[in-house]
Length: 473
Image (cartoon, rainbow, N blue to C red; front, side, top):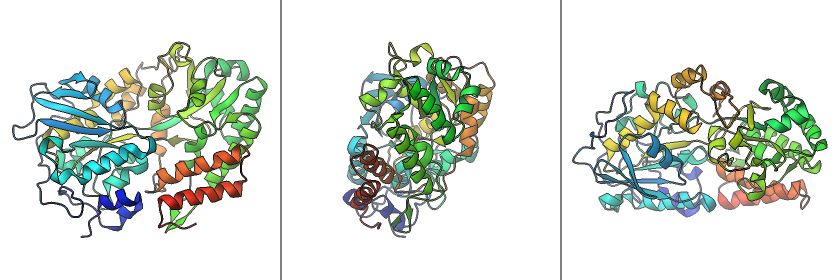
């Protein structure tokens, strides 16, 4: 069997290079820089009952390690563990305790690929690392999940004690994203990320005459209707969205082809539609070109920002829209939600167990408790306004009296549930993150009038081929 070697990726920064070899084994060996060392795979351990949260006295097996090393890029998973994993105690910002196990959080931001670079280096050193330094579990996102899932650096979740019955209520797409080329699931997630459109209720009432979700949906039911509404918003002194980058994921999740065909870069028709529609919005002054997460982009989260809509999943309103800050739209429940022009999804976080972990029992229990326990799933929705990865639990919550304060007492779960069933991963590729980022960056000059479309497109090709030298225009 040809081994996929992460060191090759680390040296070339090419995700697709890893797809050349065959998939991982049911019991994955610990990785090494050139060839895996002969180490034991995580043993199958007895797991807690599906609905029962682990008791605090259930300490990890005595032959397991005393340090649990977790690699991630922000505080999201840490906050979920702190709030919802029984027995977890926070020591400080980077350390916690589960029984007699020290939990070490290695948090490296995503900017400039820093998280993946840090993770890659640690995985390459995994085989020779001291027990207390070994990665036990790490997190991945959809755009680059294949980079890690299709290697022997990740382990079949069944080897951590997760059964088909445990995973039965999870949305299919959340399992497929972390399934390797041999059909082996190598990760699991507590959240689903179907995405919708969030709109400013006060602006909707002023410009559209209603903030009712059904009325707003009619006004943005497709991209032609969205543009017509953008014209009305402009006349009233508002922008339809803060940046055309806000709509990019809606278009890119509705493509009919992959970014790469063989080794040739391919631009889907719907990506071209985004360029044309975005250029029209920018030229009309109905949207900006701000980078996502920038200060200018986030001004619309506040009441004086004069931005009608943003697009995103449940985590977006929870983590990104400043809803706990004075003067924000969300602090007083000023956002509403509707499906928008097209259903789409954005992101998500998956837990992967690292080959070579000396804490397989605890890793398995965290996976099972945080992603398979229906009661924990409901807690996450109620306390965090997230959308959880459990069909049965979400159906119960959708039919309950649950509402989101940020969304003015609206229950968005039925919309999320409908969107989750529509998510299509058939056009997902290992090049998505690099191509998506490069394309948006290149088109910004075109939108701002600093380059022709042909010049911007040429810059895109150059950027992608620099990242992935095996590709051609």
